[in-house]
Amino acid sequence: MRTVKLALVATFALGAAMASNPPAGHAATTDGNWNVTIITEKGTCDRTYSYNVDVSNGRVIYRGSTFIKLAGTVAPDGLVKVNISAGNQGASGTGRLSGSEGTGVWRGRGTAGACAGRWEAVRL
Image 1 (cartoon, helix red, strand yellow):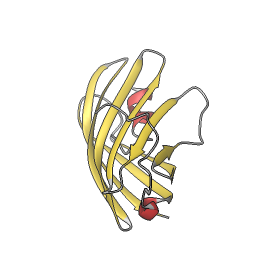
Image 2 (cartoon, helix red, strand yellow; image 1 turned 30 degrees about the horizontal axis):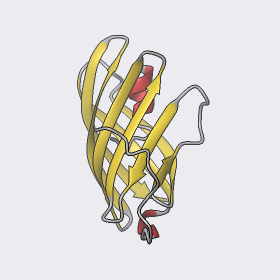
Image 3 (cartoon, helix red, strand yellow; image 1 turned 45 degrees about the vertical axis):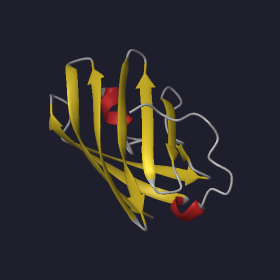
């Protein structure tokens, strides 16, 4: 559950993360600080989580706990892909950022089983 909880740190959730460099000429329209709220809709994970993340040059960066591995990208069109793991738990998410808001979905597996839901983001 902790990873699913943290997973949506990336909470952008939120598919496989794209670990390559962003395309040349990446429009930095999504760069900045974001607050992401993760809402669990299926499974036994906590109902909601909230995290702050940074987007810089198309990369999602979480500056919280060091035991969390986060890999994520935001494409020039706002498409978000994120993977997060902690130990044998993990989650992934996809969605889109546009202007000062974003939404998407996530799914993961924690110690108590599978969980899934949606995420919402606002620029800080």
